[in-house]
Amino acid sequence: MLKEQQFFTMLKSRGLRLTRPRRLILEHLSDGGTHACAESIYEALKRGNSTLGRATVFRALKLFAQLGIADETQPTTVRRRFEVAVGKPHHDHMTCLGCGAVVEFSNCAIERLQETEAKRRGFRITGHCLEVRGYCRRCLKLGRGRGH
Image (tube, rainbow, N blue to C red; front, side, top):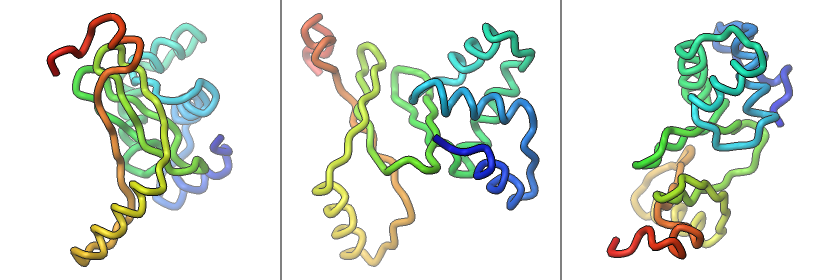
């Protein structure tokens, strides 16, 4: 979980403030699990009696992604999702196109292959986001994803 002081330091180093809305959104991301879409974050905060507007949540999440405070995925058939990135080990995602479930995974062979390919091409990797899209076991059992 990202500590508030780390977040404050990251924002301050970029000339930004730790506002109440940003703090609430970060707390939700840190405490509420991972891979939450902006709309679900907004709805959860609203249920918690927050007066934050929808646009505020969307802007804050966009800022978090730009600053590297949160990771953003954009599956083709479901809403963009966000999760805290700082202080969390690198991982990749499998996203179900049927139900929108997101599964985190790490694979050393994939990481080595990316490094090898980058080196071969004279490219220095500073980060990456791998998202594998398909259908989860449950959706396949329900007949989704056939013929794809």
